[in-house]
Amino acid sequence: EGLRGLGITFITVGLMSLGFMSFGGISL
Image (cartoon, rainbow, N blue to C red; front, side, top):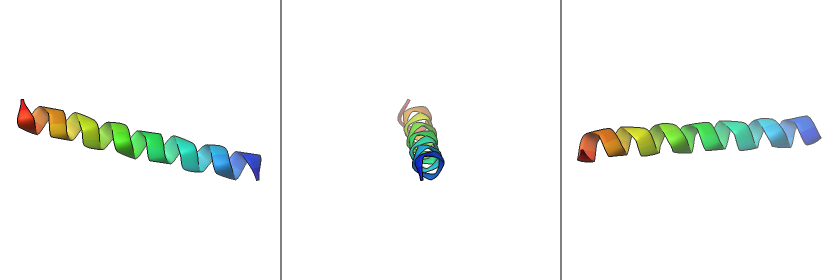
């Protein structure tokens, strides 16, 4: 259960960071 939650959190943070970086690159 703990590992699953950690994995979901890691994937969510990774996707958010990727989206933020792509948005920053497009806007800049």
